[in-house]
Image (tube, rainbow, N blue to C red; front, side, top):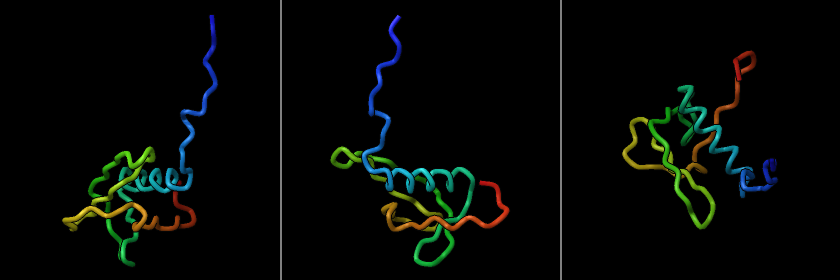
Length: 84
């Protein structure tokens, strides 16, 4: 029996963007506010798409009609003592 073949297919092309998108997904799932234009906003939806071989994300915030590029949304810093 042959074991799994090692590959780098599970390694993101852009580790920084991957981490930011992962934290946005987590914020949406846990109903944690994010910062957009210095205001706390909640994520209403996320859309992922391929952009030249990389994955890009559009964020839809509660109360906003238009989608926003994920790079424009900031993750709120964790509060001390809060679960991760």
